[in-house]
Amino acid sequence: MKKHNFTAGPCILAPSVIENLSNAVKDFDGQGLSLVEVSHREKAYEAVHMEALSLFKELLNIPDGYKVVFLGGGASLQFCMIPFNLMNKKSAYLETGVWASKALKEAKLFGEVVTVASSADKNFSYYPKGYSIPKDADYFHITTNNTIYGTEIHEDMDCPVTLIADMSSDIFSRPVDVKKYGMIYGGAQKNLAPAGVTFVVVREDLLGKVDRKIPTMLDYRTHIKEDSMFNTPPVFAIYAMRETLRWVKSIGGVAKMFEMNKAKANLLYNEIDRNTMFQGTAAKEDRSLMNVCFVMTDKFKEKEADFMTFAKENGMVGIKGHRSVGGFRASLYNALPIESVQALVDCMKEFEKKNA
Image (cartoon, rainbow, N blue to C red; front, side, top):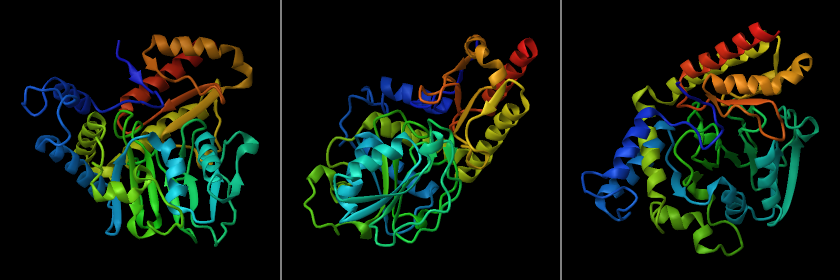
């Protein structure tokens, strides 16, 4: 039976990426050695590394003045690296979910932090609007997509101060106007690669302005200077990223990916809204294209476990909702084909036919 991979991350990769990664693990570049055995100083790997950096810049249309670095530690390490490097006295945060809250917590270790707005009052099921950003803040931090709650910021906002965005789970899912951001960062394990590498896109003129001394490994300038090879990089994950970026380019780039993602999300949301047994949990105007969260309607609450079993029997993988939300979550990351979304929709229709 064909499996349909809706897991929230680590998540689905394109078939060509899996195949090329598998081959490289057996024999990298015809060297008779595995990708995970070769030195990161080998010219063959250096070529992979530099191509990944180049494709990242090309596909995201990153302008001059910005640097891209690949780091370890996940997006969670960035929660402290950002204030370490960019916060002198004060920063502002939009609290829209678990990861935004964790980022905010770390920033408080470095100075004054203003929570400009929060959606915690409704279990992070919407994005706050109409808030005021303090103009004396060193930066304003947002999380553009929330994997747990299925909400997303769909446009690049105008911001009176430096805008920093955690784009872990929606990077490369839509075109981004990078010029509106001082920094974009995220873990790669949603749309780019297996866990192990973190991307940072930072405007270089923002660096070196804080009063504090920064440990060498936590200073972005260290990694910019060495093209992300100050220490041994996560070779396996960066190779996978290179293959993913090649795949994105081959299908038409980020604009085409955005078109495909909208079609997938619309297909599933339309079924959720139509089906008498299900309902969405996120505010409609803030619904994520990447993570679709839904539950059984009150009338059919007792059928939740039955649907989970039915879905698994029909090849659906990873649709159980996060424990803080419950219900179901279908992650529609870039590599998920629309055929898998259609299979889930058909599964929901069949379950309704048998149970409603």
